[in-house]
Amino acid sequence: MNKRRTTIMIVDDNDMMRSILRGMLRGESCDVVGEARNGVQAVEMADRLKPDIVCIDVMKAEKNGIEALVEIKAARPETVVVMITSNADSNTVHQAIGNGASGFIIKPFNAARVHDTLQKLSERGR
Image (tube, rainbow, N blue to C red):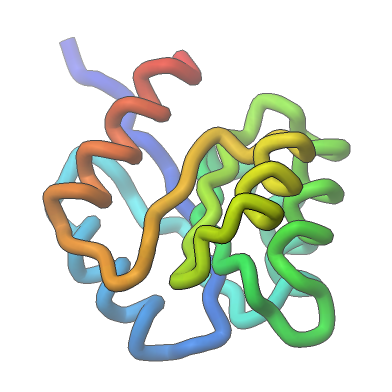
């Protein structure tokens, strides 16, 4: 039986970070279906592409990751949102979790940690 692949959208204003994360996910049991540079694009693309998981950087221009998280979860509560950050201070964590984030990936990240986090969240979401 063929398992459905998890669809993922990556949101980060840093081209290199998006590229690194996309490279880590290539060949795994998921498909990167979209990439956005800011929160405004993230909300629009999440609505249009309907990914299973959105990996979104906390710090963003135009609309930060927390603001985008709130809008994405309001429109599609079933979407798993994972925050990506280099600053996992308790205020940011509480704010994100309180607004529906399912987890965090802390920068700098490694492939094993990213895969493990996304696999656990994908399984929980199904």
